[in-house]
Length: 58
Length: 245
Image (cartoon, rainbow over all chains, first blue to last red):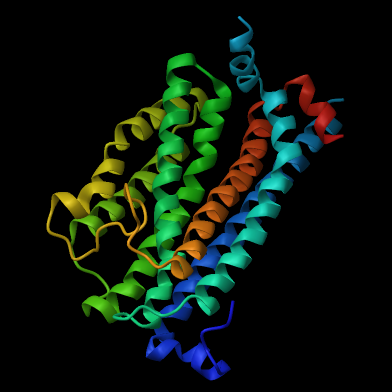
């Protein structure tokens, strides 16, 4: 359980592949966060819409 | 008949809604923890590959998202088939809930693949069987969503899009086996094969954990989107009053 990299700059460099590695992680986990947010927004909107309908015709 | 009760419950929107409401946070919570642990394992603890050096770490985002893009499509096609065969509304809702998530992760699989292809193959894109069939998967998702959006009558949209989803599932094994059937630049599977995986354990456990994390994550997102779909579809049902007030 020891980190492979001894310095932080080595970690960011990713043995020279940093410019490919980091964007791919940002894209992947950005999509993870985005989809979680989109799903909860869809639910909140559907709930609000259902509530409005009930208020209009109780 | 007791064995069929679960099936009937699965067909009942209020039951499914209540189930989703109860379990989403658990799936989401475990997914978040597993993802963070797997990220640390993959980015920091795993040793670099002897050929690819640290570029191989892209596997921890590329392989799980590519796998998810196929798993979501399969889920969508199964839900669509169930919906067509048993005329089950909940299954139509589930299939519709899958599509945008699947499309997103297909984009991610293609994007992370391009970022990996550039340093390893020298090009972001090649018209290779694996890449081309994955691109077709994206078009299937987009076609499915476009078809739903283009048909005004909701039940017609459900049926037409379900047929497309079921027919399109032939592309899933094509993607999966493309690297074996044709000469491909893309490597053959490292983990998902019978017998021993060709990977060191220190590299392997973060990857397996990441697969699990993405599966749990997808369940959480699907259940959330399914609730939204059910509320929209069942807006005149009495159970909706109880869950939104």
